[in-house]
Structure formats: structure tokens, C-alpha cells
Image: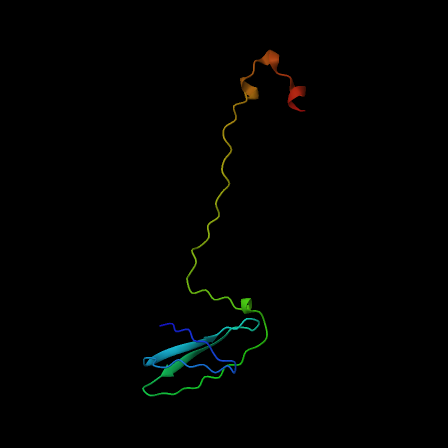
Length: 103
């Protein structure tokens, strides 16, 4: 279950009527580093107060990846198409000019 709540100007927030279970709280504010607290257990009639301290920084400082990425396999470069130019071995002997081929 994901529930998004917004705090007031004093930083006070509330998430009423949560079902019993284990939760994590994640706080994101522009200009501050993201803070996450895990392992919060909610029981019947609990009134929990979870205080969070934020450090100055960019929100992009934290990167989270939950999906395993596929293993990267390098792809060989494509082969060039076969040349249509005559090969040296197929030229008649009297027309072979080795000086022209070296230019």
C-alpha cells in the first residue's frame, strides 16, 4: 500500500486509518536529501509519531532501483556489405598496376 500525504508548514503530517502492518516512511522535499525510515509497525489503536530530520542537498542525491536489470551483452558491430570492386587476384595479369593500388 502506498499513501502520499503532505505536511503543513510546521512539518506535521498525518496518515489516519492505516491497516495493521509494517510500513516505511519516505520524506522528499525539494532542496533536501530524501529520508526513508523502514520497519515501522502499526498495531490497533496506535498513534505513532515518526520524527524525521532532513539534510540539505539535492533530491537527486538518492537513486533507488528495485528491479533487477538484465545482464548487458555487447553487440558486435555490423559487418560491412561485400565489396563490389574487383579483387586484385581476379584481374588479368597484364592490367595489374601495383603502383596504382598503393595510392
